Picture: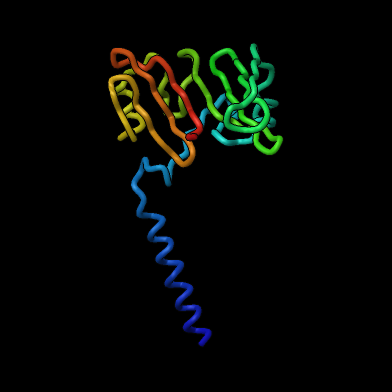
Length: 161
């Protein structure tokens, strides 16, 4: 009896392992897009307090009552990017990262001024693409490259609402 149970458990474990390996690269199930500032990694839905401490002083700050959550939505502006936060249960979380200039890049080296083709070469097949934007999705978030004349003008990491 115990041998049968062990055999069934091994079989189930093997099937689960095989199913996990069947995902397609770039799908929402197997990708996380994060932004790195030095050794600090910024991820959508991550608690903001320790990230803000690691990033140091911001150059500008704004807040407004949240439309979607309790508390305040906050925007922290740094030299080359902005962080937006939302409050849930009294804790602030990262809602968005907006790259502001070409001095910062995504983890795959894309910056404002990169071409649409460079984005596609770096990230592969997008979830959606138009003349105005290339969008990649992951669980709970998206990475969006806004375009003008085939050139990246804005890069945003956004929480899916």
